[in-house]
Length: 533
Image 1 (cartoon, rainbow, N blue to C red):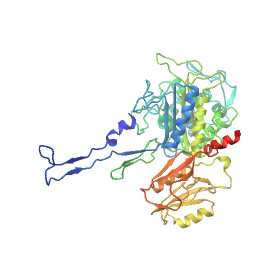
Image 2 (spheres, helix red, strand yellow):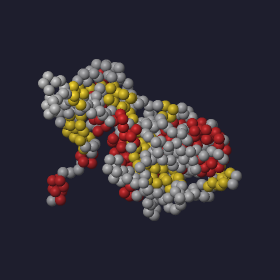
Image 3 (cartoon, rainbow, N blue to C red):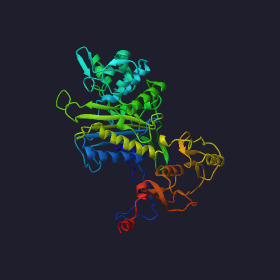
Image 4 (cartoon, rainbow, N blue to C red):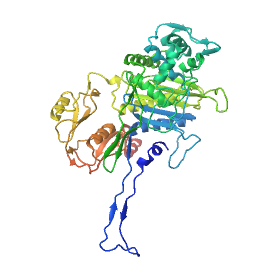
C-alpha cells in the first residue's frame, strides 16, 4: 500500500548468486572457478517526514482520541516555504504489516478522500476579493441572512449581529459576508480563483490514488455555498497547497513527501526532489493582507479562533465547521457533534515556518464542550512543540539579545568563527577548516546569543562537547558531519560515549544520551525517600 506499492520495484533488491560446476554427487570439480554475482540492495527512499514532529502529532492525536473518541481525525504539518510534508497522520489507523486496527477505511484521507471544507474555504474567498481589489474591511453589510433566487443562507446564529463591517464578518465567520463579497467581485471570477488555487484537480503529490474533488459552479446558489465551503468537495492536501500561497508571500508550493531516492549500492542519488513552485493567483501583498486578517480571528474580541492562540508565537488561521453528508441518502447529519470541525493555521504569522491543517470529525462532546476544543488541543500542542524544536525564537523572548545569523557559506572558517564569537554565538567547526561549505542554522535565522552555530568544512571532524545540546542540534551535527551518531532519548544531551577532542572516522559510532527537562529535574528515588523521612 501507499509508497511501498508505488515504489515496490525500486525498493525490492536483487538476490545474489554463485555459479560453479559440480560432479553428479554435488562436489565442486577441480579447477572449477566460482562466478559470484553480488546481491543488490533495493533503493533507499528518504522522506521529508520529520520524525520528531511526526511523534508530536501522534502523541497529541492519541490524547485527543482518548478524551473525545472522534469518528475520524487528520493532521498535516507542512513547511509552506518548500511544500515539504513534515508530518501526516490520521485516526482510525492500522498497522500495515499486521493489519491490527484495520477498519472499513484503509485510505489515506489526506489525499484519497474528499470533504466539504466548511469555513476554512473562506480564506481563499477573502484572498480572491483582496486580489480583485474588492475588499473593504470597514464597509458594512446586514448580517443574518441572504437570499438568492429561491435559496436563503443564514449565519451560524441564524439572526446575525446586525449591521457589521466585512472585517468583523470574517472574524465572526459570517456566511452572509461571503455572499456580499461575491456580489462585489463576481461569483464566476471567484470560481476561477479557486481553480487557480488548484481545487478541482490533483495536486500531483508523490502518493498514490489521489482524488481531485469537485467544484460546484453550475448555478449561482452553488457558487455561493462554495464560497463558505459547503457543497463543493476538496482534498486536505489541496487545502494545504492553496494555503502555501498565503503563508509563502504569494508563492504556491506543491506538497511532496519524498526527499531523495538513493542507490545504497553506489551511494548515488537517483532522484533528488526539489521544491516546486506552482503558478499562484495572488500577489505577495495580497498574501500579507490575508495573513494579517487571519491573525485577527485569534486576537480580536469577536474572533472565532481565540482558543488557537500559541504561547510565545503569533498565529493566524481560520476555523471550520462543515456538515457531513448522509451515507444513505440526500441531506446532512444533524445533532450535537455531528460535524467536521477543522482549523487551517500558520505560525509565526509574520513569516510562517509551519502550516497545519487539523480535522476532527464527530467528537463525543460533554455539556459545555465545543467541537473546536479537540481541534485546538491538537493544533496548539503540535505547533508549540514543533516551533520550539525547530529553534524558532518565541516572540516574547525576542530582544536585543536575538541576532539574525549571517551568510558564511564560501567564507574562510577562521574568520567566520571569529565573527560569530564577536556576535555572542558559539561556533562549532565540522571538518578541518578552510572554506565553509554548509552552515546551520541558515542565513537570517534569529538566534539568542550563546546559541550554537554549525560550520561545515572538508576534512576529519573533531568531536565537540555535546553536553546541553538539543536533539535538533545534535541531529543537524550528525547530518552535516556524516558521522555515526546514535541518539538515545529526547530532550537535551547529558552524556556522550566518546570524549571531546576525539578525531573519529565515519565508521566509529558515537552514542549520545538525552533527557527531557522534566526528567532532568525529577528527583531520584532515594531523594524522594529522604523527603518522606
